[in-house]
Each structure stands twice: as C-alpha cells, then as structure tokens.
Image 1 (cartoon, rainbow, N blue to C red):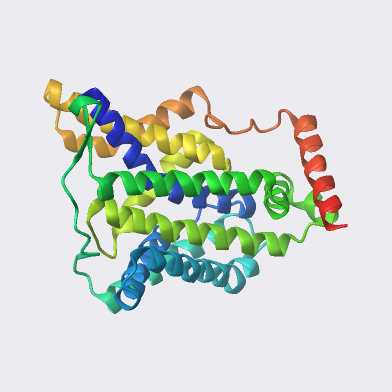
Image 2 (image 1 turned 180 degrees about the vertical axis):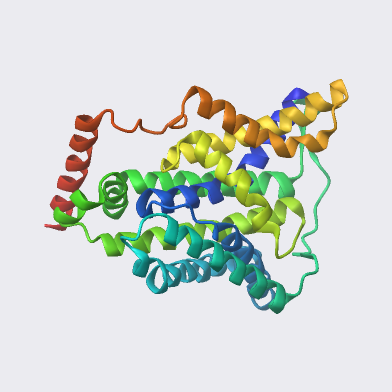
Length: 315
C-alpha cells in the first residue's frame, strides 16, 4: 500500500513540476515572483479545450495551446515587464498580481465559471507488481510521462543549447552577460516563451489528472508550486524538479499516514508549507540554491565559461 501512495505522489509531482519550472525560470532571469503564473496554466487548459473542439486531437490541441500561451508570455514581457526593468522586484510583482486578476476574470467571463472537462474516457486500472500497484493509463501514466519528459527537455535545453546557456548566464549575472555580448532582451523573451509553453502543458496535465477544471484551477496550485520552487532553491530549475518531487510525495504519504492514525486527510494541503518552513530553517537558500555571498569565484568562472562557449558558437 505504501508503494501505491509513493506512486500517487510521483503523479502529483508531475502535475507541479512544469509549473514550478516556469516559475523558477522567470525568477532566475527576471528576479521577481510571478503571481500570474497560475493563470497561465488555466489559460493553457482552456485553449486546449477550444483547439480540441476543432482538431479532434487532444495532443495537437495541447501543442497549439502551448504556442499560444508562450505568445501570451512574450506579450506580457514586451508590454509590461520590460517597461518595469530597473525598478526593483516589487513593481513587477505587483504587476503580476494585476495580470493574474485580469486573466482569471477574462477566462471566467469568456468561458463561464462552471466546471468543464475534456471528456476523456478513462479505462479500468492497470495492475503492476502482482496488484501491489495500480494505475489508470490515461489519468495517471500520461501525466507522469508528459510532466517528467517536458521537465527533462527543459533541463537539457538549459544545459546544452546555446540560448539555454545564455539564459543561465543571464540568471547568474545579468550585467556580466550583457557586457559579454549576450542579448538579454532576447533571453527575457525566450524565458517567458518557455515558461508560458510549459505552463500550458502543465494546465493540460492538471486537467487530465483532475478530470475537471475551472477558472481558479491554476490559482489553487500557485502556492504549492511556489513551495516546491523555494524548497528546491528559488531560481534553480533542477531545484524546482526536486522540490516538486518532495512536495508531491510528502503530500501523498501524509494522506496515507493520516488514514492510519486518524488525522483529517484534508490537512495535506498544509504539508507543502510545513516542508517549506522545515527546509528554510535548515537550509535557507533551499536544497539546490546557492548561498548568497559565498562561492563568488567559482560562480564567476562558471559564468565566463558559459559566455565563452556562447561566443564560440556565434562566431
């Protein structure tokens, strides 16, 4: 039975991981917490519903929605956040709250406040390990595969692609990256495009996993995603993945043990924040975050090496 709850935790983490990755990317490059990210998930779920009605293909509709939400992310950067550069983290943070309210109310006004669904038919559960583990092929295995596959693709892009290295260099030291020839404006827009695209896919994963969704779906997941990002190390994409795994598995295991000892299972909503407080007390920078004011020389060397590789690739 514990194995089943561990599996459920991994599935729950697959719902959080893409959203947490987008939050971490935006914070790393633009240095503010984007409170409008949850609505990007919701927008992706609804646009997928619209495209699926015409294409009759949920996969193709999800990819089209990812492109559309990526464009919305770039538009936000171009119209709002680029104009607030240099004004500190508070101004874009407040702007993101305003954008979140606009998106959420626009979605509710356009599609209505009622609960909707993709209408996917879910087959019977599949049994593994002699029945010790059961999973629904669509509701569990598809989100599991999609979430971690896209997360791995983003991490590989950041590590090996030229523009991915430029994003890492900009996140580590924006001024040094700029004077070394990195087009930080382009990096900003690509960051928003990737964050918006993976947010849209995350919205589809949430809708498939939860069966139904509504205009506040993304907003309800925003705080657990923030908890995952901070636990893993804010600004660290790999930390966002680790934090999502810890949050998802801890919530599922708490649900299991609450049934054993008679605690109200609804307390599992507090688990990410209890985990957040615990990690910050022990390691304030998060599990994979860098300590402020330490390791300056190795970090500077790493940034310079990334910038050299970018220049070699461009020459």
